[in-house]
Image (cartoon, rainbow, N blue to C red; front, side):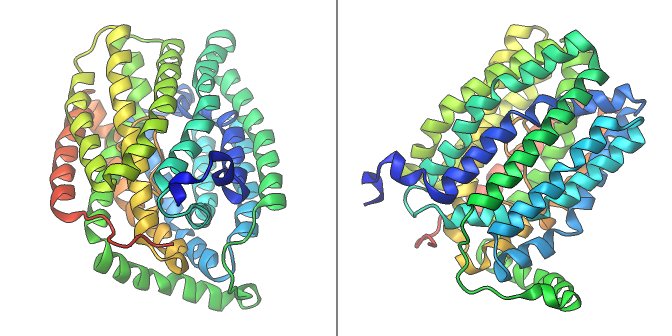
Length: 423
């Protein structure tokens, strides 16, 4: 039985390679990710422009995601992931040398386009985890990298305090580039293919493009025939989360009065909690099922999104952020397991190109929702987020609580656990 398999037996092969990769990434991009909005503002971007840039990033990601899912299912996943990781890594050089916010906008768009390998990455992970252990293993692949990631936002805040914002961010992006190059090599050398029947689609590029994008309709038909409840909730959450995601650090800095260093400490504490709770959450999802855990996550997040806007002290922000991180972690793990259990192996690349690998509630440091079906509402939310924030800094969080409430009721009515989990 799966429950009797040891951790050492489960954490091997592709699961081990991808976990090590995420550990290394945790040492790189986590230093700078939480402070990107401040970096843009320091370059002269206004609040609406910050939201617009995030919106452009989401729209840019739509361009190649369907093609990425098609390649993953037809031509294979392992080598595609490795080469595309190197393409993504090159974007950090542009971030490091950007002279203006316009260059940062270009770098962000380029980076999001390069993420078209994510459906293949998500699919190869789902392929490599046995039924019955998915909650536990997904939790471990989050908790172990998170244990390393814990210190990184704090380090980013410390570097900003020592070197000032722009020099610290340039240093962080340079470090991320070199770490990304190492990750690319590891994935190229050690990832094993999980698709047995592969096609040589590279010889006919027009056909690959035509079939890659035409398969979008096939994917959509399958989604709305088999997991339409999840699809609707995921779309709503991608919009809701994008309203607040760019402005956590901005609100903390401008309204509450915390420094970048203070916010780094909060992310450090949140990272510790996320690491510890993820170990518990995986077993909880395997035991209770995805749907129940999704509802629990909503129940915790809804009130504390609003409470966050009432806080005035560092200590209270820490407490509320801990509760939101717990909610975010449970949501991500339970929704990731739901997709792995619901999607057949031969379609995982294309379906995950549409829906990503999990749902996010918009917490900094939570999972990143991705997929062409969620990018458009995510782009719309990001586009208006800066305008909404400018009208009233608390308004994005009020809207978030309202939309999370709607999503919870939709989940209760429309989401059902798979009766027979897919291999």
